[in-house]
Amino acid sequence: MKINCMIVDDEPLAQDVIETYIKDFPLVTLVRKCNNAIEALEVLKQENIQLIFLDIKMPSLSGINMLKSIPSPPCVIFTTAYAQHALEGFELNAVDYLLKPFSFERFVQAVNKACRKIEMETLATSVKQGAEQQDFIVVKADKRLHKINFEDIVYLNSIGDYLKIFLKTGKIIVTNETLKNIEADLPSSLFIRIHKSYIVSVKSIQYIEGNQVVIGEASLPVGLTYKEQLIGRFGGR
Image (cartoon, rainbow, N blue to C red):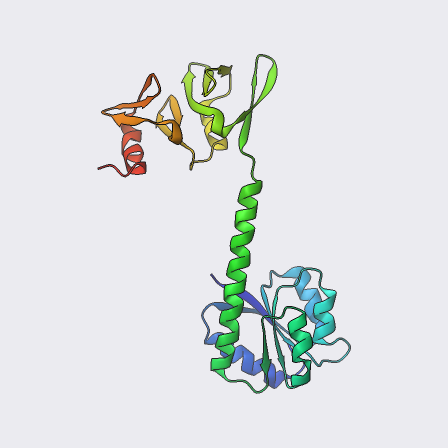
């Protein structure tokens, strides 16, 4: 995963050193270099910055105060010649603190810490978003809108202009939705197309025999174009 970063430092020489280190570190991409915190705050509004190499002592607005002003700041690695600011930097949840002049090895150590933190935060966000996704579909039938939970669906069967949705309760909901449209709303982790007219719940499949899928008392046909994917899904040969 490539990480977009920004250098914020009022010393051109310090900028050059960090830029040189970044060029030798393949996981990090330098998006912008800023000479002061005010300029950096504007860049943050325009660019997707995941990591800031932030000097502490700068004119007008210090790196510490800049970080305090950002509601949801990206990862920050402080770069400064003043060791006395280290504690305050860590209290602001900075990933690391590089005391100038620092070696490439020390730079790599700090950036690796940032990469791990960003990766974990990205994963946590992904899991949260997945948990927030809806776990049901809504279909119109009998002049009503029916909310149907994924876990209640056994299989779906398209017949002409109609679609039958077979539920665990034994109820069948008939709608004029197309199988193609409904398939787009069903998670592929839970459902699989086995025929041009059938989609089944993976959990509901009892066994596969020849060109048939058995679910309860129903034996459903498996189309030739779908059989390979179905067998592969279950680890068959």
